[in-house]
Amino acid sequence: MRVIYEKAGKILLKLLQQLMESKMKHFTRILTFMVFLLVLSNTTFAGDSKSDVDVRESTIASLLEGLASDNMGLKSSCAYMLGKLKVTEAIIPLMRILHNDVNEELRISAALALYKIGTPISIYAVKQAVRFDESERVNKLAHNFYTEYLREKLNNTVATETDSLIAQGK
Image 1: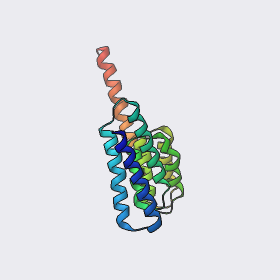
Image 2: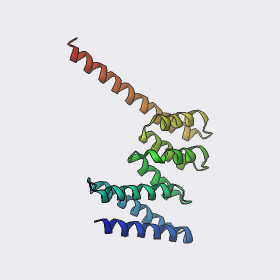
Image 3: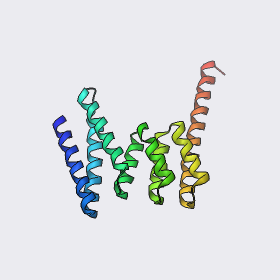
Image 4: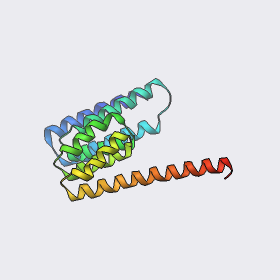
């Protein structure tokens, strides 16, 4: 199984190189699909063996490398998957995208990924995007992500307090 993952990783890197050289749109679709397939297969077949841990680390490394790509689709897909997997190593690169990228869609993808990661630093970055991003669209969506975070936090607090009152018999 490890050999399959290594071959998929090599194919992914080869496609990335071809994409960088040719900048053809169909390679973007193929590459995005390969990243998705690699991550999906990794999470589907993940176990406790050391080889699975290595594959996960290499997959995360590939996704982080994809954030540095010039290809918008690849960058956005990698941001989404890093957020879905809650990869804390991605926080700084995602914050860079959120604060510095000229493309609204990429800033929105970065804000969503940071919200999904859910650490105090990542949530603070989303909150700051609400205040400081020059795009009304990015502001609005970052506001929605931050509001949802607060709503989830409030619901968890209320549920915890309710459980403690029930346990006390009140």
